[in-house]
Image (cartoon, protein in one colour):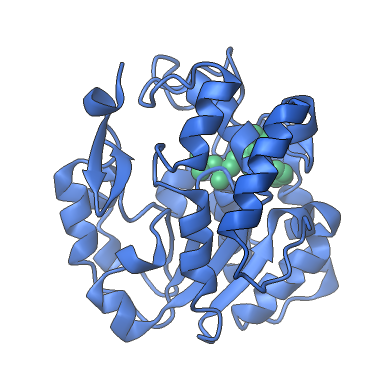
Length: 287
Ligand SMILES: Nc1ncnc2c1ncn2[C@@H]1O[C@H](COP(=O)(O)OS(=O)(=O)O)[C@@H](OP(=O)(O)O)[C@H]1O
C-alpha cells in the first residue's frame, strides 16, 4: 500500500492512520499536562520501549508488578495514539508517564505552559535507519520499505512516519537550555545501563539504592525484555506486526548499521548528515 493509503499528514509529517486517527491527534492537542508528568520523547526506533520499561520501574522504586502485568503501550501510553482515548489518563495518579514521537514544535499549549519533565532519547541515525528498515518490513500499518536504497532516499528526505530524523533531533536540541529536558543516548544505555538508570532516577528526583538500581537494570536488559510479553509486542496480532519477518526486540545493539550499509550508502548518509547537522554543537554519543 502507498503513503496516501496508510498515512495522514499532520503538522507537516506523516502519521500512520491506523494508530493516529484524527480524534487521537485532537485529543493530544487538548491534553492537559501536569508539572510532574514524565514524557519520553523519541524519534521512532531510538529506544522508546526501553524507556517505557525503565521509567515506571524508577518511579515505583523497582516494583516489577506494572512491567509484568501491563503492556508497555498502556503502561506508558503514546499521547498521539488511539489508546490514549480509552485509558482515562486524566484520572491517573501522579507522577504519570507518557511517550510521544512529536517534534518540539508539535507540542501543545499545555506543554508549553506546564513544561513537564522530558526524557529525550537519541540514537545513532544509521542504527535508527537500520532498525526502521526491518520494522517497516514487518509492520503492515507502514509502507513497505522496498530496497535499502529506496528506504534510504525516503529516510534522508523525511518521507517516513514522523518526518525527518534531522528535524526531530534539531527541534529538541534547540531547547536544550530548558531545564525540564534530560538527554540520554541509546549508546550510553548500551554501554552502562546501571549508570543510565541512576542518571534517569536523579533527573526524576528519585533516590534509589544501588540494589534497586541493579534490579531495574537487570529487568531492562535486552534479553529480559525480549522474554517479557508485556514489553516484546508479542501480544500484537501477527497481521499487524509479523515478528516472524523481524522481531520487535530485534538485536538491541549499537552499530548494526554496519551489517546493512554499503560503502556508497554510508557516503551518501554521511554527506547528508554533515550538511544537515553542520550548525549543531551537541556532542553525540556516536560521533
Ligand atoms: N532493553 C533493550 N536493550 C537494547 N535495545 C533495546 C531494548 N529495548 C528495545 N531495544 C531496541 O530499540 C529498538 C526499538 O526502538 P523503539 O522502542 O524506539 O521503537 S518504537 O519507536 O517504539 O517503534 C529496537 O532496536 P533494533 O534491535 O536495532 O531493531 C529494539 O531492539
